[in-house]
Image (cartoon, rainbow, N blue to C red; front, side, top):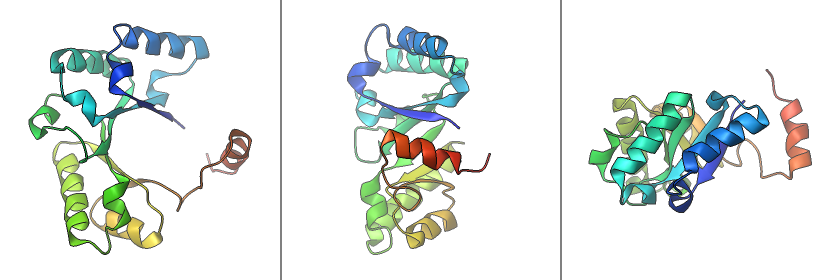
Length: 167
């Protein structure tokens, strides 16, 4: 089990961000490999040298790094080859109409292919139907997030739900 945390560009750019993450991991006794930081594409707009250095330090420690909402922001594809990423997340806006809009289907397939070509995992967010999941799986996406699997839950219900999951 891992925990994914959304990180804004503002948070990531804080001069002590990496040290704060490491401090929280130590304080709470969490292995770095159990933490996934989901970074927004806007992070890629400026300051790439510092961004790459921070991402590198986190990755070397075992933290998983993902670009959230891929395809809707500021990504320059040329940056992807320099970033120590583990995953791209297909934005829900492309998943929503993947079965009815040929453009959304093409974009989803392209993101999956791009991720695979770069040796990255790919996750689709906003998966609400089995038909969406099947389409994405057919094209090589193996990780999904959305109401098909679990609705948003208050923490007590989430904890109870997690107890029902197989090890």
